[in-house]
Image 1 (tube, one colour):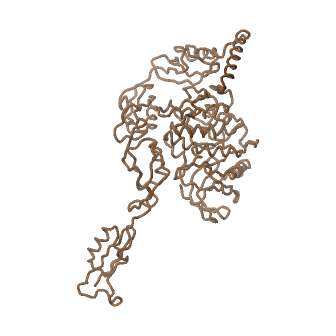
Image 2 (cartoon, rainbow, N blue to C red; image 1 turned 120 degrees about the vertical axis):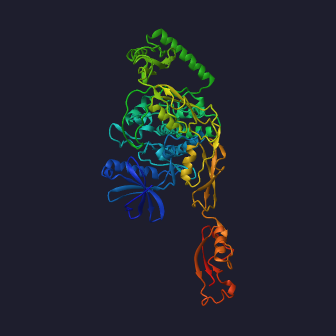
Image 3 (cartoon, rainbow, N blue to C red; image 1 turned 60 degrees about the vertical axis):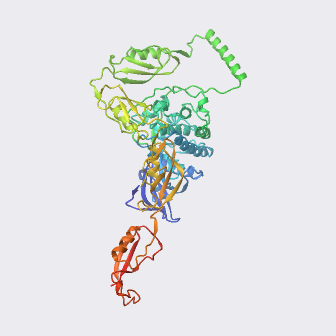
Length: 634
């Protein structure tokens, strides 16, 4: 947080002290409620927007929508007002960190911790949906985690009651954050709670993979991928994602809202089943198909602020209906009816069947291959360009492969040659790098990173850190070559990190980056070295072998320890100093006894130079570093 240079007081009550964050519509400050003497969060609309009645109306609706939501996982709104043309909202101040900060730098969380957090968010959204409010901007920056691990959803900045039909975004655009848009939101269509389910699915995807499913050079490109692109399964980027959790994510990310979880409650229920080790419904369903190849760019949209994005139009691809579970009798009837209809269609209609075989276009140039694919009733999706010894623009590979069964309109991914690499590249040594940084280094050189968790990691290895690679650093390779990165396997132990001296929030971030979780309980312990409130240690202790997903209990400092004050009366100054410092106390001011004012002290000649009095009584408890004044006999 940044201290403010001008601690302005709003409405003669709320005095800002620190800047917390800058959002797409407003600034968020830490402020002091002078009336109730408590800290609050003050959200202030940007000055240039305060003059715009449309933005002011949206801001007012946020206050009204959020003020009516009372739930343990929703940040409450206390007040709303205007001061000299500046509009603001007063909210509870959450002492913690945002999920965006936890995930910064492509960090990931364990599957179990991710499911726990998202289940709490879904709990909050389900409540809001029942109150007729759709959030419309679910993203990591709007999910806060308190010091004790509780999740709070904030910023209903573009939320609207479902019954309200007027749209406050500019014509031809929608408000939100493109990375987390639902397809219907990107198209400017009416949205309901299932749109929030999709956005939360994107958040869960990012938590376990380290990146959202779609990235691109602009919000428009990302929005387009939400509408038309295929979602790559999380296991394509991380082999450690459990199958059941992947099934949950993919159902939440179904492009057709009717195939998606039908409510946040339904989404949460499956997450809780997963957390409890029970079978999840998503794994037993036939949800919307998602091809394994998705548009992937090395650059990402700059920032994650709420903004207006042009509406995407055009047909969606890779969507098919979910099969409904029926009794055996109904299923038999359906099969008979479909068989009869299919026979009638074959006999009476002069049309191509919806299913066909993927043509073989490998070896053709891109133009010819595209024409062949379109002629077969398919569409060309992503085109990946890679270096090879084949001629430029020659198709090297397709997905689906030649001969595979495909449906009309299905998207085909092409891998196309860019010709031989102009020059070899030197493989960088990425051992010791985080997995995300290592992958970035390789991708910048045109190399393809491949994750491997089968090799036993040496002692001291931490999660998401490369401990070996093949080929080794400084080897010669060409663009398009694969470099295998060896990281800690799931279930292997690694040493507990040292959290001493950190705040609880810093410790939470470090635990998350090391795939560990925070236990719901903590203990306090006095410390002569670490200030009160900071972490002193952990259970288990630093260096102890731990496993991914293990809950760690924090030990925080309660302040200086206390010790019994030694009796140094009658000791020489040197002996008294040694006794005091040995117990952790300090020698303060040393003076000579005024025998006139204190005639009962220093009565014998042998008392000269010895301690006649000490400022803290012997035998009493006193904190570490307590200063003790001494009086010596003359």
